[in-house]
Structure formats: C-alpha cells, structure tokens
Image (tube, rainbow, N blue to C red; front, side, top):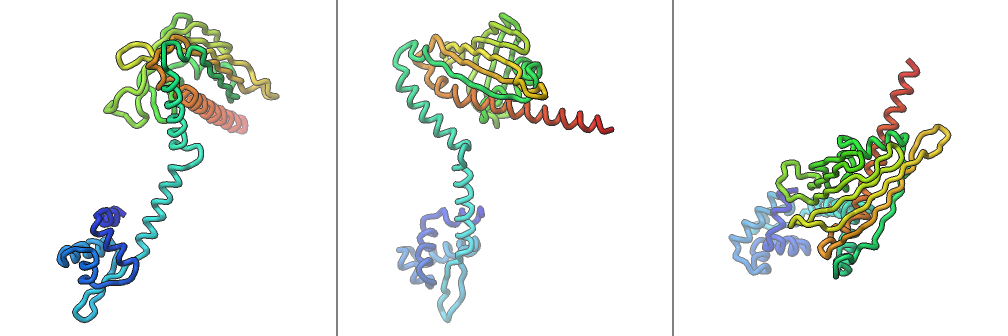
Length: 289
C-alpha cells in the first residue's frame, strides 16, 4: 500500500493513470497526451508498474501499458474503511465536531467577566457497586486517576484530599503523550468543602489559564444514594456542576464541561461495572469450591 500511495502521489503519474483508465496506450502516445518527454514518461510508468497499478507488454516496436484495477479497488476499500471508522456514530470525530460547535458558541458569548456565572450542568449515573465502593473511586487518588479525565486525555498529576479543606489538584495531558512532549492540556486547583463518606462530596476547583490566572471557579456537588435494588447493590450518583467567577478567557474551558465531565463519568461507570462483575464472578467461583 505504501508503494502504491507513493506512486500515485506524483501529479505526472496520476495523469498517466487517468489516461490509462480510458484504454491501454503505448509510451509515445502517453507522453504526447501528458505533454511530457518520453524518457520521463517511461520512468513514471516503470514506477507505476513496480507499484502494481499498471502492467505492460511489448507489441512489435512498441511497449503498451494498461491499468491494473485491482490495486485501485484495494486502495478505495481501505480509504472507505478509514472514512467509515472516522465517521462512526458517537466516535471521536463526532465528539470533536460537537466540541467545535460548543467552542464557537461559548467564545461568542464570552464578552465580559461573569458571562457564564449562571451556568450549571447536571449529570446522573446509575452505577454498579455500593455507595462505599463508589466513594472510594471518587476520593482515592489511585482510583480517581483511572477515570477522572475525558477520553482523549490522561491524568498527569493528581492530589485529592477527601476532607473539608483538603487540596484538589488535577493536571491533564494528551492520552498518548507519555513522555510529556506536548503542552499541558489543562490544570486545575481547588479545595474540598464537604466529605461525608458514601453520601456527599463537594469541592471547588479553578482551571488555570496559561498566564497562571483562573478561568472560573467550578462548584461540584456529588450526591450518592443506594439504588435500592433487590440485591441491595448499586448506587445512584447525581452531580451538579456550577460556575462562578467566569472570565472572558474561560470560554474554551466552559465549552468542554458537558462533554468532558460526561465522558469521565461514563468511564467511572464502565470501571465499576467491570470490577463489580469480576468480584461477583470470583465470589461465585469461590462458593462452588
């Protein structure tokens, strides 16, 4: 595939391919139609032949070239596969476009300080596991780091002291930036206000602007309650996310709240579902031994 792409990338060779689509043609005619010298045309045709996209045969004093459609069909199928993957419903490109629309809207709205101070976001997730298990995932740094980031980011630094007055520090990097070669995507610092184990957690956090100032202050309130299932398992999690002290420069951060926080909670739900399922399977196995 690489040789084919390299061969087709040259405009002169692509012109020869389009001429051979019509019918097989000899070198001299191809050179004339392409407006090129015959030696150059011969070299281009040899490159295309090595890539498998054309074939040739000698007929008397002439060498006639013809198109091989198979490699082009293979390339078309691969390009269609790539396009379909990028265009998957609910996929990363759809999220990218959704964030772009939100970004433009929030930038237009951010005309003066306090522009987003009336904004609030609500999230709800029905989670596997008891409130005690969920609480651990909300407050223990080693567990928090597994989910507390949108899909395309990773937690690079995390401090979470689950007590009133405790520090909150969260720094993001790109999920594939293992060596720190790219810029820090975001950093936020804050403080815990309420920490009632397995019941309620509230904290304030402020994303930092590149100059070190704060973009806004988020007020996050997480309430847990037992799901009330017949087996006594499961937790209902309700999250309220409010904004105060918004600056004009906070638009890019505000634009990503609904998508980013929602993705993080989806990751939390998936982790709890997997860990609870694994725990249940282990218990079932143990009980049969």
